[in-house]
Length: 205
Image 1 (spheres, rainbow, N blue to C red):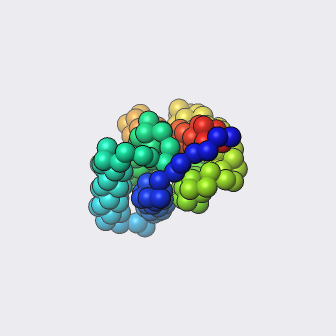
Image 2 (cartoon, rainbow, N blue to C red; image 1 turned 90 degrees about the vertical axis):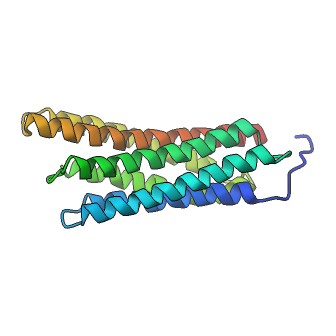
Image 3 (cartoon, rainbow, N blue to C red; image 1 turned 180 degrees about the vertical axis):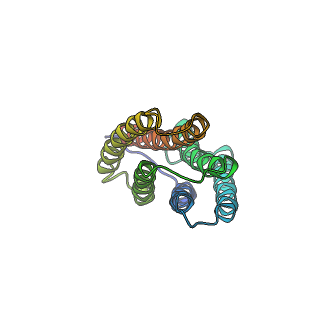
């Protein structure tokens, strides 16, 4: 491996870690939203605030890339990772917003399993982002995220089968399916984050 000169500035790594912490917050609010006794309007308001904070972190990251001559790794990878983290938050925010807007009263228990997957993905991502500084011990991150994404895909298919089983009214199927797709989108976005981290690690090895 040739000599690589890295900048001393750790701002990029701090911003990635900050973005990942926003996802932990978002996943927690999503879990709270699914609770029967939650104040859904209050949770949705807090989610909007969390999503706004996540957007601010992403914008700060982009401005930092645009104003920095030497970056810790390729600019396109920084953009891709920042966008991927932002996509996860957007999907979770969408799911919370839909539950409120659609005034969903009864949420199938299987959706909680998807939120459990999202919470675990968020925790793993938050733990992995600080390790970007050294590019060490990251393979367990993308391997586990990929495993969780596969589990999420299985859950997704089972949820859809349940929705179309005849146990729900047509209008409820339409409402719930939108929410289910938002959850699936968030899980898929986590996999894209993991894949981006893997690509960065391979390039930097």
